[in-house]
Length: 356
Image (cartoon, rainbow, N blue to C red; front, side):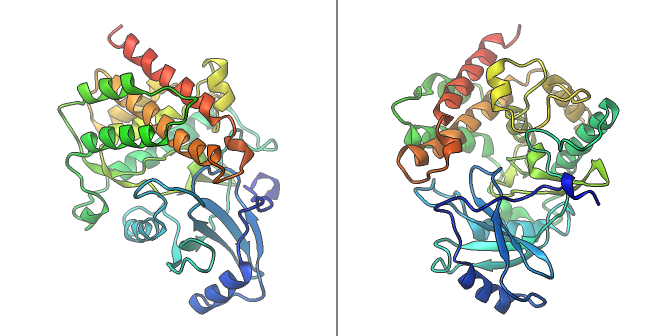
């Protein structure tokens, strides 16, 4: 195995340290086969929940906890995230194995859970420098990742007994009203109100609604790839936002992060996954591929595109709100307010181009 290709955690950020003695003592009551105290590192890719790697001599584990600071209602629910993955694992094998959940917030300042570590490549902004790639392989990777989303959307959640994952019917309306409210509550002085986009989404909700299991954060940097063949997916991570929802809205969420090779410089500056590579689909090709394999007729994707972009603007603004009010000192969040401006501009651009 080429170790240089593997995704590596880094030094724990200042102010986000774990009480590892307390965690270690608790873990040894829950799990067998671990000894000594682990080396602790932290993954820098996430902008929401904090994710750590605990390296024991015998095995490596992943710990997920909520961030500090004000949280939106229902967000960062570690217990829900843990139980959802436990329930989904038998019907969707890309979910990591869940190992232990702790609801005692005195240990680290938040509830948290521990899961198996999937060792492989996580395709963040760029693929590893030492990875030899071709356009044909990258196309295969693109299709395989999209197939994972399609496979999730095709799970018969009722037959699998997963009706409890979300409310289901009425999802579209709940999402539009919910994200409009969350954006407004997190607004700071230096971003637009977003009212034009909110009103357009409210007035243009599709009549037809499909319900399936949705991931709602499905991106390349949330999948783990086989180090021996980077086109093969080993697992899908970050199930914090998963629920029962509309599959086209889930695809809209995915495409909000999809930066093409020919996109403008602001999009390129915010790119966080390798969708710019030769061989990657364009957003239009993604929509066509997905709808064909799902047997969905979709003549106009504008609503789902605008929803995905606006929802991402809401997520970014919530994160920036915490930085703006000193609830996190992660320097990566300093200029997120500029990204909010850009995303709302993209929403308006898509609306104006509808039907052209």
